[in-house]
Image (cartoon, rainbow, N blue to C red):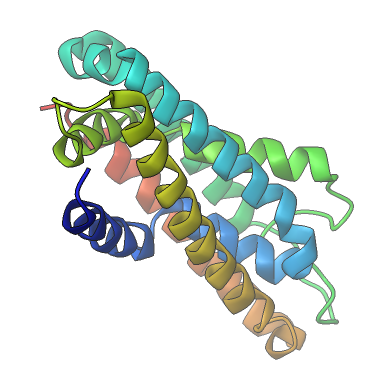
Length: 210
């Protein structure tokens, strides 16, 4: 892989990762609810799922989803339903009188494991991600060179950029905690987050593997 090719990949992933989507929305909302440290398990779940998606894409699952309309549709609707459910929970989340009160979903007693699971399931909910990695990585590799080192370099690069953007969204959410001392502001954020998750779920249900 030439340096210029790698730099092009860096620029591409930088803007793709920066685009607000379910992963970044979840990172920001958990930053609001739990602060930076409390959102780290969520990030771990998101990144673990992305690692599995990349590995599965290398193994050919991305091509399988692209070729099978039925399988793609099943995964698509399952992921869409999960995002809509998260949106419903956020929309009707309780509000409190202090900045430490959760503002996007339920109790602050949600365990690290539950946050990890939520992050993992949100990242896994989009079948388009499998197709995306299966289509993206080969564009930046050379057929006349060993493939594994090239894919590992791309995967590590993606992880560094993606985790950096997730941290940026988490810090952005955490910075809003003091502003959200007013229950009306908390309710507004709940509605925005809930509506965004539900909109993402509805949008996901309309995508095609073509």
